[in-house]
Amino acid sequence: GTLDPIAQGVLVIGIGSGCRVLQSFLEGNKTYRADALMGSSTDTMDSEGKEMETKPFEHVTDESFEEAIASFRGETEQTPPMYSACKKDGTPMYKLARQGKTVQREARKVTLYELKRIDAEKKKLPQFRIELECSKGLYVRVLVNDIGIKCGTLAHMTELTRAKQGKFGLEHCLPAEHITDATAIARHIVWTRNTLEGIPVPSTGALCNLNVQGGEGGAAAGGGGGNAHGGDKETNGPPKKPISEYKVGDEVEGTVQGVTRFGAFVDVGAERDALLHESQMGSRPPRLEAGTKVKVVIISIDERHGKIGLTLPGARKEQQEKEEEEKAVKERTICFSKLPSGLDDEKIKAKMEELFGSVETVQRGGRLPQDVAYVRFTSKEAADKSLASPPSFPGDDDGKAPVLAECKRLPEQLRSRAMQLLLVLDISGKDLDRNAIRNACEKFGSVKFVEFDGRNGKTYINFVRGSGARAAKEQKHLSVDGEELPIIATTEDHLTSFENLRRSAMQRSSSRKRRGGGGGFRGGRGRGGGRHKRRREGGKNWNSSR
Image 1: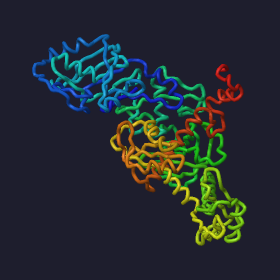
Image 2: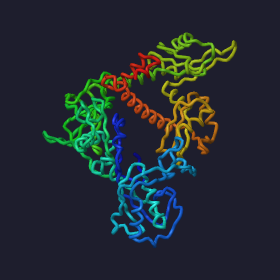
Image 3: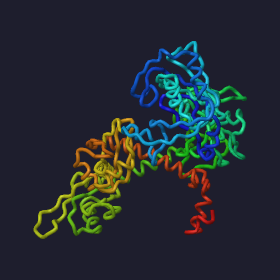
Image 4: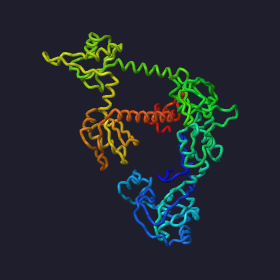
């Protein structure tokens, strides 16, 4: 379910395969507490919107107010507001409303099981506070607006708290500040399952029950109230040590408490379980299960958030060696450009070995321009020599002056090429669709990626070919859905931000693939593996086998 921007309270969130059964947790009635103010209306029907009209309210008494709200109890019809998440032809209506558009909306049946005024001694008219229990689909903003009209004046909502969603109440909520703490979330799910009836429990799995080995998932209630049940570890043995007593580099022995698709939670004797992420398990990760004893090395400590990061002994060294090897290969690979036509790989290799030293490979063609070649030398010294004294090649025709090649080390060339393919738009204060931006750019050339940087108000468009990016950069603005978006000169900072966004997107995609049948770090086929196997074996008729 969704909450209004000014609202707080219960929000039910599905995790992993818990999303499959999330709808069952969203069934049932909802309980709200809302504050409102009489005398004016806004375009959004709450205090976030623009004031549209004012009207006297002095004639409204406590008695007439009670009579007015009594008329709303029971089944009634309500028309969704324009500023809502409801969709019209696939577009959320709040986006249309922000563009100044109004569309026809159909009224739908809703039920108010209970509606009463509370805290009347604190909230005296024209202010009032109501508490209501209703079916799903009811908009409290619309109800407040209708109450104002029923009283012969206007009203808009100023605060809203969802106190209950189905069987979840504020007392079952994990505070929003713990939403990035995986250990707190896992233990909160365990507490929820033990506290509430009707919460599914996996038939097999580890202690944390957070989408663990049995393939089950969970749903957790999060919101603005409640307690972080299980935030700190409950202990039955010796007292746990504070995180401040641990040091980066310490090698300790721990016990696996739970396994998820992104790693394992390990009890190393601290106040909270530490996280052994799958990326820190080396090229051949071990099979981990709840109760497994494992030796680990501490690589990070976050005392503020109570987190400890782990790696397996030797895994970090292996990763560093691999990174250093890749870096060394790039350092001895040189990009030669502006080469004359008619040269083949053998001629280039012979020329480079004659001037600088032994050559490992020469790469040309493919997506590389015709006048570009990547030459990988067997030593960094030979590569450095080629940078210091760029070679020259005979001209295309007899008597033509020799052509001096341009040289760049491969990392520099790749970064320069990446900047050429990147278009940066300023979208500050704009709410635009990714596909709309992609379609507007496709007229210049094929687009590979579109990434939003909401924090800095930028959008990055990665073109497939340099010609498309150059044609787009010749424009000062890009027109998208009637908005003129300024085109900004691409800088190193822009490229870094884009690379970070792509890295995050790839990690999310990798996680989804593991959940859908990629197998994950434990080497299994994962959920969906059988279906994909049938698809491979069954050819075009795989749907019939389902």
